[in-house]
Amino acid sequence: MTAWRNFPASLVDPETHTPPRPRFSLTSDILSFRKCRRQYGYFGNDGFVPAQAVQVFFGQIIHQVLDRCHRHYSGLFGYPKGTMPVDADIEHYFDEVDQALRAHGVRPTSPREAEQAKQILKTFNRIEGPVLYPRVLDTEYRLESERQNFVLRGVVDVLAADDTGAPEIWDYKGTDMPPLSSRDLQDYEWQMSVYAELYKVKAKRYPVRAVLYFLNELKTKPGDPVITKRPKRALYVVDFMRAGVEPDGTPTLVKQGLAAFDLTAADIITCKQAHRWDAPCGGDVPDDKTCDICDIRWNCAAHPSGRYKVRTPV
Image (cartoon, rainbow, N blue to C red; front, side, top):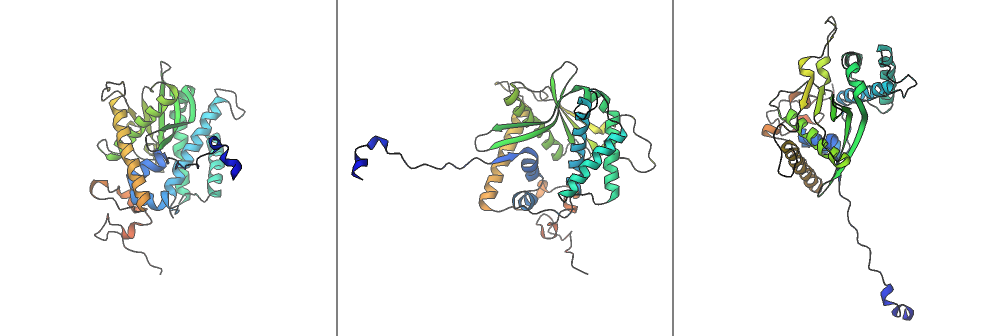
């Protein structure tokens, strides 16, 4: 101990621990929480697995097969660059992804669900592929940015070039197009706006627009005619400059999206700390499709009238 007194400048202060800032995904955290915080608490935070994974299956297989189509066109699967996938290729890629998803416990609720997803993929490949694939700059384009109290991450399905070569974002939605006045569509617009900000952090410029493609609009029933052109409600364009520009050059729509999602991230952090995930109420109650397949709908305060009855073993 006497020797240490001769070297006071060599003493080191105890290490301080700074907790890492939480990382939030735009889709699996921010949008999921905004759709239903109670569902997010059970499945996104606590790790429970939903009994009905059809939405997971549909979204995963759509995104992964289309990503293979983009790579097919770019020549990564042994085909000459510029070769369009055909229906047989869609079948092959679909089977590959389907087997991988089943290995992780994700499967369709019925063979009909799988066939419908396959039909949608073939239709998209046929009517959109020849125009979109040549313009693809990158796929599964990962973005990340540090906010004040958290880190925000996102993955852009497709980064494409418009007719002038400027970048635009394409995002595939495995749903019908929601009503124009709906909260869901507003959240999607804000999601694209935040993607635009994250892209600017990485590329030092904003994309010119975002394109939301609602793939369920390509769905047909047995006996329906084959779709040969894009349905009107399949595509929705988000013009970032539509609402004007702030004095600092930030598009107003981007600023609105960042502000809304910052508040959502703060709500998630508060709920995590309190370990309390209250049911949504009023205008925040999700649509019927979301509630109808929810495993925890039986005792949800969002439906106090007893709309959903408890199922008991027979």
